[in-house]
Length: 137
Image (cartoon, rainbow, N blue to C red):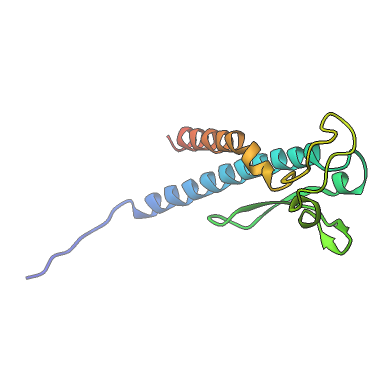
């Protein structure tokens, strides 16, 4: 006993899958970039200094290819031999010196950004999912 299967239209189907991958990758990269820019702005806003190298050094980068795309927010500034944010972010003894947060602790000014912006970042991904669905139809 034997059987045979003939697949017709396979090249067209594979082309559609490739196009879907490109759409998903582009929309995912957009959502990650929007999230990274949002976190960058939040970190700058909550930075422990009002002016200077630390705030202006906070940047973002989007790396990788689908399915491993990463958004990275960071700084190259160091304090007393410790890279930020480890020096000020991890210690409860530092406080804002001036501005609207004067006297409040700078604790988690950097790492707390993901918690503060979690809803907005999720909204970026939900919008990307809607755009993907619309583009695939």
